[in-house]
Length: 221
Image (cartoon, rainbow, N blue to C red):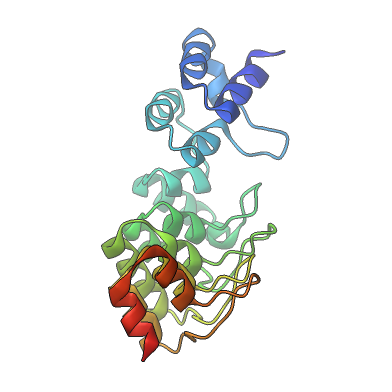
């Protein structure tokens, strides 16, 4: 097995100790990508391996647009979009847009910049998840960040009554997380509280399951 393959395997298995040792011994593995083209950096970000992410970044000076967005490197994002404005809606090797990554990783400043520079607010991922930026924004664990991002997306005419894989709408996400501000915001913009996911659950059902009583009351009116 090559050092690159071993490095990617360690990341995939969550063995950050081995991954960091391999990176120290073979710095070039910081540029490794899997068979689908996803970089070691993005794979580490997906797993929340922040220390490993920082070490990979210390060996990288050529971040692509998706990596720059996901790591909050605004200056790099600006440079890449000035060089190639059309890349604002290009999808990553695993199917996500820059705007989708900004929403997923809670990069609110970059999200606003992408919107101002032509990002398609309603473009879904090209993978089976079919997730739109508003789904990723609504799912963010920080309630204030989620609401801030969704407000920004709505200003650019994001659709609210849209389902990702599994039939979940943004309101399903907000209800499941107990985000009262976001639930109210989505309802004000026409979200359907009776929408059912593929397994038949409404946002109200999810709020009840999670014990979010105030959201239950909001959705029961």
